[in-house]
Length: 246
Image 1: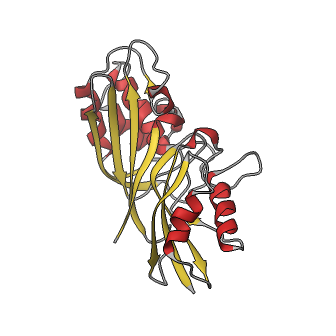
Image 2 (image 1 turned 60 degrees about the vertical axis):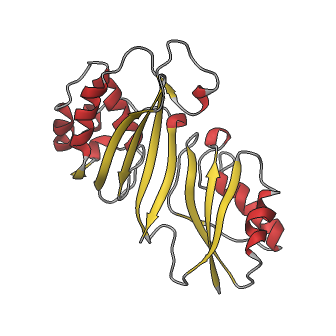
């Protein structure tokens, strides 16, 4: 048996998320169907995690197990020929027998993009959150550093989150201006709760607008109450950039 490791990029706009769901087409479903046509039989993709509807990925990692290993080009060029324009297999490799895309992951890097244009941008709007008005980046950066470390992020998870523990480790939160209009919030951590990054960003934007104080992040983490934190930023601004492994 061989374990095949894939790195996948996709625009999540048209999908219900990564995972197969009964209420619409998922990224996983589309790739598995294309893979089955190339291999002649079905494979189940095991991913490093899930992305919600509308969320994008540049570096989603997934694996599958096969008893009939094809030339690796079949899993990239062959599958890509059958995939729609908004999904692509970027890298393919044969992994160690004990490799698991989810359980072997040591961390992830998410990027959230914000567009600060005074007028909405039809192009940027597909991959960013349009936030009108000035944002105080100094205040946002002060607040962002309070997320770093191991904390209980119960206040920063969606109500439907089923994680058994809400303690997570955040390695870094960096806020940078890509240009005059686009800014990025880069969050790296050991793992994330459902909507955790989006709620973090929504809270940071409220701080940048002067509606909250940076020090309130500590109160939110200590209070463990979702109502204390800010809004959930919309999905289109979020992108899974990379999954880390040993």
